[in-house]
Image (cartoon, rainbow, N blue to C red; front, side, top):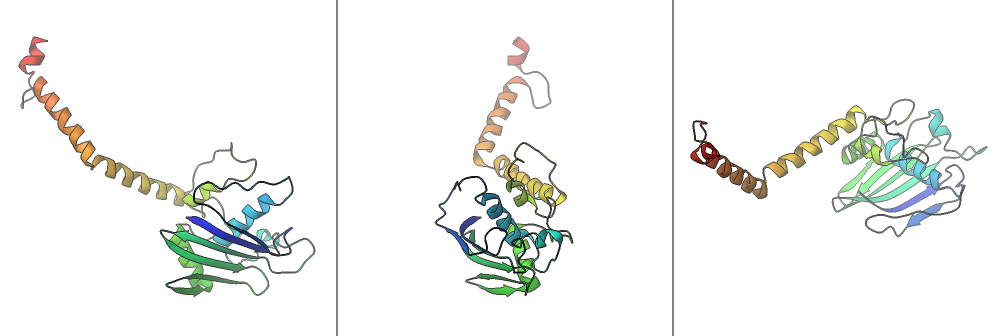
Length: 206
């Protein structure tokens, strides 16, 4: 997944639209002074991906700027496997969600379900998304001050990691390089023992 652009409006301290663009492939660093809103940007990014647009939980209500009855809105332009997607979520007042690509556009629950399929996470509960519902992708969203707190991955994340590791192991063990190594091992064993398992002449002399 590659992020191209993020726009935040009426989200905590960012009442006016804030647009972040120009992300390069690989690692991008967002640097600013304390209290500039870096953690809020991360929270907005997590919200647009993992939170249900129709939720009215305390967490969703906390997205509003203090004292304002407005609709927190986040828009994300991202890319997965060469396909560009645009996701827009509006929370609380006139809540809505849109997910669009060159192949078409989805809204409402259909958009939420398509997003879950794309990113491999589960539907958030009534209290909002948590480590389990975010799946394997959620393991990468480390909040400030949490980098040294190592927790156990949830069921969804664990299953995804197991599938990926199994695929990688299968790729390695089934590759040409591995087959060549196995053949060399078998030849070496043949020099040390017979087909019936008895010590070969070379091993007997040793």
